[in-house]
Each structure stands twice: as structure tokens, then as C-alpha cells.
Amino acid sequence: MTQNRQAQTDRDPMLRVRDLKTHFPVRRGLFGRTVGYVRAVDGVSFTLGAGRTLGLVGESGCGKTTTGRTILRLIPATTGEVRFEGRDVFALPVSEMRRLRQDMQIIFQDPYGSLNPRMTVGGIVGEPLRVHNRARGRDLADRVAELLRRVGLSPDCRNRYPHEFSGGQRQRIGVARALALAPKFIICDEPVSALDVSIQAQILNLLERLQEELGLAYLFIAHDLAVVSHIADEVAVMYLGRIVEQAESTTLYANPLHPYTKCLMSAIPRSHPAAPRERIAPRGEVPSATNPPPGCPFHPRCPWAMDQCRHEAPALRPAPDDPHHLVACYLYE
Image 1 (cartoon, helix red, strand yellow):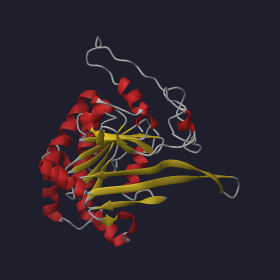
Image 2 (cartoon, helix red, strand yellow):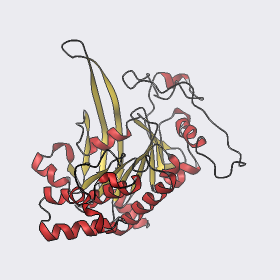
Image 3 (cartoon, rainbow, N blue to C red):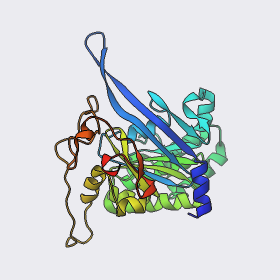
Image 4 (cartoon, rainbow, N blue to C red):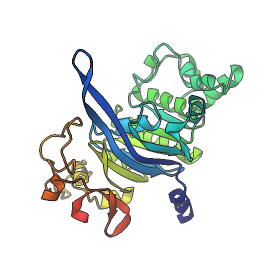
């Protein structure tokens, strides 16, 4: 990316998320009394520029998928703000939100459960075009054929059903469906985690090619840092509903700062087993999102926790030597 394009991205991002919180009530008893909340997303903020990819990584259950679905209003937010090209997503009426959905799409994690087994491939890929009155008849058939070709499938397969395809082919069908309305922004919700390693590389290459050709912006959600390193321009590390570190991909992989990020990085399999690497293992288990620990959410598992970490949560701030590298840790204040 050129410096001019980067400056434009920073000045006027396509997507801006501010202090996003999504809490789910915990109900018990005969009358469903609320006794607490699951703090799935607990104050997430980030920006994403046009044509860029932000990788959102963390352990299962940290709130990554909930963040993505809340941005799309598939799940209601508790508080916070999401702006897409300047428009307040949460304030839009239903009619305007329907139009906005043409610009914001999602690729789901499960290529088996996300496709209707009773619909043909042509029906699945063409459904967005029909619902939004974008194509009918011969035009619809031609558009579906073009979408299938774009993702590496033959148009001849349009009359077949999802169960006739492999996992990688099904995920290509999901990608074609997401592309049908020519979106500007796609949330990729762990799109390769259910696939074999060799197929993962094919899907990642497909997503990169589509981004280059169509100028797409991605929020790429994953738990595998090795996968994210191949596609993300920037990476945000999430733990227990909060972003604890964020930086350009090359910077984060070369110099992780937060103790949790260091733990994740040390667990990435090495291409050369003989290369020395210190294994940093967090202590204990991930705390419950219904009763998160006071202070820094990672302090019960952190090898370098201080007394201050147990009482007050650190804010996400620029690192001392890099204003574009954000970290929420008292070790760098």
C-alpha cells in the first residue's frame, strides 16, 4: 500500500467500531430472572480501511464471532457504535439497513451447515440477487454462472446440491454467495478452520485474489495465527471480549508485546523444528465471561502479572517506541 493510500485509509476508514459491547443475559428460575450477563464483547474498538484486511484472532470463546455478527446487526449490540462509510449502522431503519446489507456480507465458518441442503447451488448463489431484486430470468442465470466461474467452480454444477461437493467446494459456494451483491466489505468468520490444510491454502489464495480484483475489505476472524499471517495487513488480538494488542501484521509477528500474544506466538508450529524458540504457556484456564476477573482480564494466567494488573484494567495505548502498535499492558507504560 502506498503512503498516500495509507494516509487516506487512516483519515477516512470504511469501517469504524467504537467501544462495542455485546452482553447476553443469564436467566434462571421459573420466571427467567436475569442473574448476570455473559460479556461476550466488552469494549472493542478498531478501524478498517477500504481494500484492507484486519485479522481478529484469539482463543475459541473470546468473542471474535460475536463481534463480527454484531457489526452486521445479526446480533443486537448492548452499547457502542459501528459506522460504515460514515453511516451509523445501529441507527439505520430496516429499509436502509436492507440496502446496506448489499455492501456488507459474511462467509460462515461451517461450509456444511451454512448451505441449505434443499436448495441447488444455483438457487443458493442466486438467492441474494432475487431477494434484492438485482436479477431475474436469463440475467440471473448468467450472473450465477459468472460467480461460480470467479470462485473456481464450473457453471455446470448449478443444478447440483451441496451434499455432492467437498468441504472446500462448499466453501467456494459460500464465497460466491457472499460476492453476489458486489459488496465492499466481507466478514470472513473462520472460513478455513473446518478445511484440510492443503484446501485452506487454496481458499486463502482465492480470497486474496478476489480482494485484489474487487478491492474488498475483510475482517478475517481466526484462531490460527499462522493462517492470519498470510492474509492480514493488520492484526488485532482478542482475549475475553477485549482487544489486548493491535499492530501491522509484520510488526506484530516480529515483535509481539502483550504476554497473551507472546503465548500465542510461541505455540505456532515451527517450519524448522531445530530453530530455538521459548515456549510460553499461560497458567490455568480462561476465566468465565460471566464473571471476568477484576483488572486486566489476563492477569490470572500471565507470567509477568504485577499487583496493579489485579486491580485496574490497562487501556489500549500506543507502545512507547511505535505509535501504530497498540497494547493494553502495564509493562509498557
